Length: 431
Image (cartoon, rainbow, N blue to C red):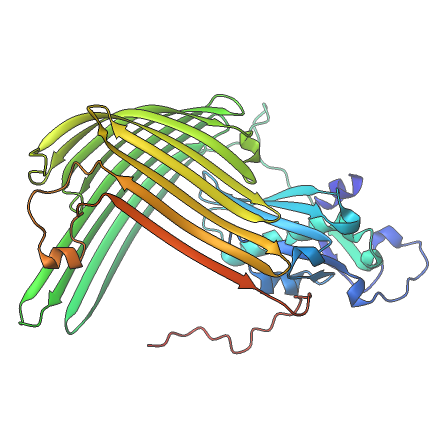
């Protein structure tokens, strides 16, 4: 524990001479590379630049499979209020280090360059590995150097001085055009958000808009044009009640040509319960969410139910399970919702995803969803034209949706994964 407290203030680096831990010890014979600590770096939850880490962390051996590792580093990530990400790194001891586990975190800043993020993660990886490498033959080849500590500006009560009071604002505008002889398209989208997150409160406001135009030259030299517009404003307030319970109030205003909704307004309260403490959310969550609300709709044209506008009450139940463990990750969610005026107007959605390492070098991935749909109250009256069907200009009647993806992966050969060779990677694009 003293070792961990000391190194958290500085940077661990490999060096070809003895460390401060062994300044008075007699010289040790050179250590063979195969005696270095074997680690599995498992960060599939976010982009992990493995080539960079192999180059930066040279005092361990990287292996491909957990069954060959002595330390399994499991990385997970969650977005933060400021636009950065909180990376949680679990160091799980295996073999001779079984039971010696640790957890460190790295907080990236908003708009932080990728290089700064990977260097920050590399530093945390090195810090977490100290306690394990200290018990190997490579201990005498480590050196620890510390940088002067800096103090954040704080008030007399100890809180950080923040002129923005934790509020974060973001804006974006994107535009694109593309075309060829028989077709062309253009798109513009914009967004604005403001949010504030503390342990007690979470407040989000988001506004988005999208305009898309496409033109197709048909075989008879006629032109088919299609335009789609989407606007939306969402407001969310979440109050933390304790380690397991949260209360929510949300509202939204939107417009969508695809759904034939000139205006859709919704508001309602809700509550959430997590079977596990929220502090464990990076590794496991089993949440139960219930939301009830009122919605008002004004349609572009008469619906199949002969409506131009209506006001409806509804309720939704969502159950979600998310697990990230040494054997892989899995997620499963089930949503059920209905309108109160007619319980037959409802939908059910089941979604699942998993990535499981079954045995050495072999893993299976499975992603899928299935929906039963009986609440398309917004469907436009009248038959869709062939062109509208082909370009998905408007939502069509359906009673179900499904998606399924299955994959397997098998790797065999050398257990070591240390070398990075960037030659001839290329960065261009081909037609």
